[in-house]
Amino acid sequence: MFDRAQPYNDLPPLGVLNIEDNIKILKKLVTATRALATINGNLNRLPNPLMLVNTLSLQEAKTSTAIENIFTTEDELYKAISDSSKFDKYNPAIKEVLRYREALWAGFSTLQTKSGITEQLIIRIFNQIKETNTEYRPPQAKIVIKRGKSEFSPGEIVYTPPRGEEIINKLMKNLVDFLNDDEKYPIDPLLKMCIAHYQFEAIHPFQDGNGRTGRILNLLYLYSKGLLSQPALYISKYIISNKDDYYYKLSAVTQRQSWEPWILYMLDAIEKTSVIANNRINEIIEQMDLTFEYAKGKIKWYSKEINEVIFSQPYIKSKILGKVMRKTSRTTLTKYMNELVENKILRPKKIGTEVYYLNDDLLRILEG
Image 1 (cartoon, rainbow, N blue to C red):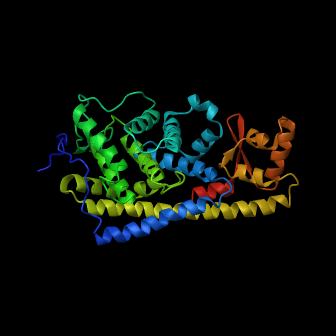
Image 2 (tube, helix red, strand yellow; image 1 turned 180 degrees about the vertical axis):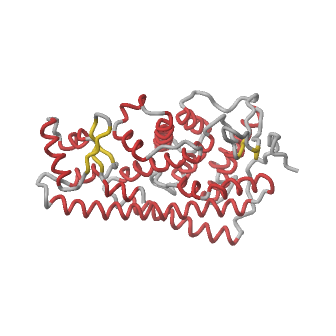
Image 3 (cartoon, rainbow, N blue to C red; image 1 turned 120 degrees about the horizontal axis):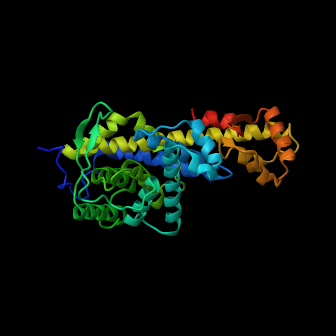
């Protein structure tokens, strides 16, 4: 019998699973792969693909941290990214979300110059999320996974990950080899991602931040295999909407090696979040075109470059537009911002002593 309260030191290393002849998995793999492939083509329709990735990565960061019961509001986040110079003044939840987002970007930048997922990359992602310089958890750390834990209840132990430095090192080396060695492990990369995500969560190599690190690893692996040109996938939205299924199916693999339901769950997450991402790209492009056509008929100085900037993030400050327009005078900038407000392209919002300008059309799409 599997004992949830004892370290799972017998966690099997990854090998070639007999799943690629499973009809249900094959059918789902086809539709998930097709949906994922459309994102890359759609991203190329954007004048600046990083524009969407910038906003989607924030949504992914917010939801991924919410899975760990760290909650923020859109208002707080959009304000924060419009003025990152004040990072030290933000509350701990905001900092957690922003660190997740920066960890995603840092990992993405690393893979643009270095191929393959490495243990060092995984550790750097964790370090950035948790703002630490530690590595894998030490053997004396009594880590257990609980459900139903609250201030008034200790919660129920549902899983105890492997314990011991040698065991964790061996399992993590096997995980990285599994992801990178396609000759030894000839499995479709999308299936590899599903399998490796379970394994990473089961190893639970760090004292904290494993869920967030694992979800970033998913996106980076898809990028490393050419399945995503940008980390523009919002997987955490699906997970938090189906959170009970996520943990139930993880446990089923641990207790019964029940891989099929878990893999189908993850493939469904890829497919449905790909559809969401593509719909958002289409909506943003359509709205950008409508806004540009409207604004250029109302405002003489309005340009495509300015249009792209106000769709780069939902909250912006006047100095951002000032850089694009090469205007430094506060009086001149105020005049231009007022024109945008008068024509209902942006909406001013005073937060504390500062004024932010909101793109309500972009907010509607992102929060829809």
